[in-house]
Structures are given as structure tokens and as C-alpha cells.
Amino acid sequence: MADSDADLMRRLQAGHAGALERLMERRRELLRVHLERYVDAPTAQDLQQEVWLRVWQRAEQWESRGSVVGWLLAIATNIALNALRARRRTDSLDELTAEDEWEAAVSLWDAAPPGPEDEAIWRDQLGRILDLVDQMPADKRAVLRMARIEERSLPEIASRLGIPVGTVKSRLHYALRWLAERMEDET
Image (cartoon, rainbow, N blue to C red; front, side, top):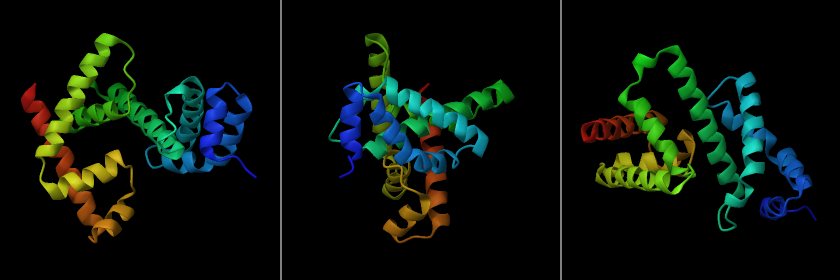
């Protein structure tokens, strides 16, 4: 009988490198497809190596009550967004928009604060974001939560809400713009 993802993670947390190899074999294609939603194929391949390194280094951060796949995809999303932000910064430091700033803030949801001072700042910023999300119109908030927190695909969100994919895209864009403007107003 094959080990579940959770079994492999528990073995990985105990320091068994073979568990990482098995998890990589099982989830490599899923991560490739996920990363290619953000970046081109060669970059996705490079970023995937970074994902697996982070999984190895931070295995103890996975909590057994959470989904291993969800945790892996959150790591991959953060790494891909960081790569995109880094590319944008090198392309043009002067052209960051409020939406870019929101994308940076979104990564706080999955970031692990490095120290006590940083954790206090992180918690404050996260609290501000969550307060703003609660103030957002309900239809936009639902799409934002499904897309950014639950990491559902646009077609899946459309199906769950019974609306066209174009409407999902429009609501997500509106929600990001709405949050970015309010975050900008607070600074």
C-alpha cells in the first residue's frame, strides 16, 4: 500500500530524505502545471527546484490537519509571485502599481515571519488586509477568497458560483483594485 502525502510529510519531518523523493515523484507534474500558470516552462522548472528545497528546509511548518497539496501549492505560488515581483523590479523600479503592492501583501497570508519584530509587523499587516477583505462587497469577497486563499482555478470558481469565467475575472480584478486602493489610502 502506497504512503499518503501526509505519511510522506510526517516521514520528511522526521528527516527521511527518501520521503521527499517519493513526494517529488508524486507531485512534480502538479507543481509544474501550477507554476506554469505564473511563469514560462523553463522558469517553472527552476522554481520547482526552489519549491522542493523550501519543502525540505521547512517541512516542520506543515501541520497534519492541513492538506499537503494545498501547502505545496501555497509555497509554489509564493515563490512564483516573488519571482514575478523580482522580474518587475528589475524591469522598472518606478512602475510598481497599487495592484503590485497588493500582490506583495497577499503573499503575507502564507509567509512565515522570521523573528518576533517581523512577526508583529506581519500580524498587523495581515490584520489590516483581513479587515479590508471583510469590508469588500460580498460577491467580490467570495471570488477573492476562492482565488487567493483557497487557490481555486477561475473555471472552478465560475462553476461553484454559477457565473461565467469572464465575470469571475472581472470580480477578481475589481477586488484586487478595491483592496489596493484602500491599502494605498491607509499609507
